[in-house]
Amino acid sequence: MTVQTSSLDQSPTRPSPGRPWWTVPIIVAVVALLALMAYGMFAADRTQLVDGPVPDLTLTTYDGEQIALRELEGTPIVLNFWASWCRECDKEMGWLQAASEDHAGELFVLGVAHVDTERAAVAYLEKYGITYQSGPDLGGQFADVFRIKGVPETFFIDREGVIRGMHLGTLEKADLDDWIAQLLAEPTAAQ
Image 1 (cartoon, rainbow, N blue to C red):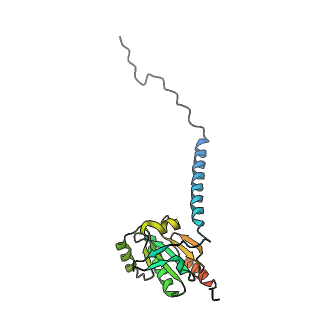
Image 2: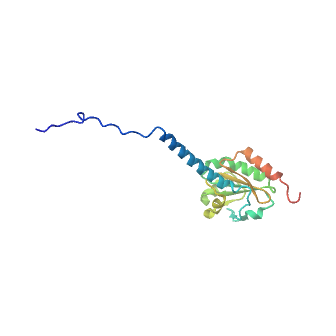
Image 3: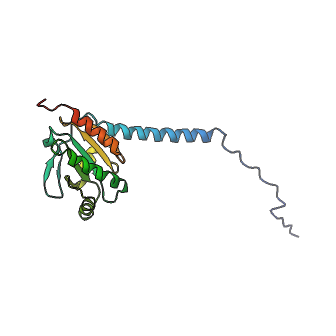
């Protein structure tokens, strides 16, 4: 005779002891620390550009003009990285255009299309009535040197060709106006 047993007849197995209560908070703390360290390295990497010389780069605009950043020395520059697919960029374009018009001859606004197609970028510029110089970042040279991680990003370069600041993300009009006022307040070589 064979005796069959069901799973109900077996004594329950004792659950294995779980992790001590303190392991979860430690894991969370380690992950948070690693995230902060990564952010710090990212931020430090970017801020090393500030107070440094403008890189020796040349942008070929959509009009075919060659613009060398170092040749603009003597004129403050607002260098804006944008893309036609960037909805956050939409907000800034009109303000940058107005700044270019309001400060013509004393400020140079330059746009760099980041990870975009020429057709989409040119259509975007036309849609927003952008007349300041803008061109594609062919080969990603500008993005590499300026360490661009996304768009929009804006850099502020003084008359001496020194990067004085940067703004990651959407630039508010008041912030743009403040930066322009600072750049224009610096004395020219003739003053």
